[in-house]
Length: 269
Ligand SMILES: C[S@@+](CC[C@H](N)C(=O)[O-])C[C@H]1O[C@@H](n2cnc3c(N)ncnc32)[C@H](O)[C@@H]1O
Image 1 (spheres, protein in one colour):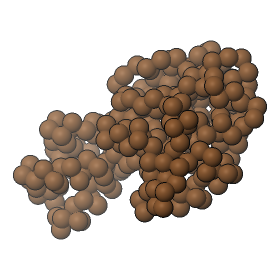
Image 2 (cartoon, helix red, strand yellow):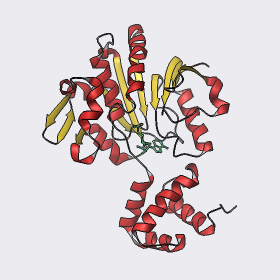
Image 3 (tube, helix red, strand yellow):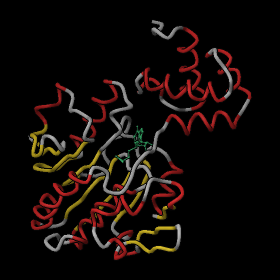
C-alpha cells in the first residue's frame, strides 16, 4: 500500500533498502522524509523520482544520504541527572561481583566511556569489576569509538560535557583541540558491530544503556529492540533508555521502573 507521501517516496525507500543496504522499513516515515528532503534540498531536487536517479548515478550522494540517515548525535554524560542516578546502581552491582554493562547503539563511544569514568570516579564503585561492551550498527563510528579521541571542533563544548565528572583531566589526555580518553578508561570497554533489530544480544548484562535510538525507529522495530534488550538482561539487571523515550505498552510488564522520570528500569521477568 502506498504511503501518504506517495509512490515516488515508496519506490525511493525500496531502492535505499535493496540497493544501498539501509533498512528503511524499520524507521518511521516522517523521520526518513525529513532526512531525505534535506538531501534533496541540498541538490536542488524536488521530486523523489529525480533524487532516486541522482542516487543511482552518484556514489558520493549515496554516501552522503547514508551518513544523514544514521544520526550519531551523542555526548559525554548526556542528561547528567541520569548519570547521577546510575551511581547507586553501579555501587549496588559492583558490590555483588563482576558487572557487565552494554552500551547498545553507542555511536562514537562517549556513552560507554562516560560509564567507565563514572566507575573510576565514584569511590564506592569497584571499577576493577566493571566490563563494558559498546555496540553500534555503523562500522566507521565504531573505529572512532575504539580510538576514543574527540576534537573540540567536531562537537559541542567538550569541557561542558565532561563537567559532571569534576576533575576530568584524570581520565582524559588533552592535547590542544584533542581529547583522548585515557588508556585506563579505554581498557574497560570493547566495541563491536551489532544490529539491535536483527541480532540477539552479544552476552548477558547487569546493566544495559540503550538511549536515543527509539526516536528514529518504527513501532515494529521498537518492539524487536525491546525483545533483544529484555533477553540480554540478567535477572534483576537494570535498563536505561533515553529520557524522551517510552517502553511500548505490550513490553511494560517486563520492566519495573526504578527512576521513572530518568527512564531507569529493573528486569521484572
Ligand atoms: C542518536 S545515536 C545515540 C547514541 C547514544 N546512545 C546516546 O544516547 O547519546 C543513535 C545510534 O543508533 C545507531 N543505530 C541505528 N540503528 C541501529 C540498529 N538497528 N542497531 C544498532 N545501532 C543502531 C546509530 O548508528 C547511532 O549511532
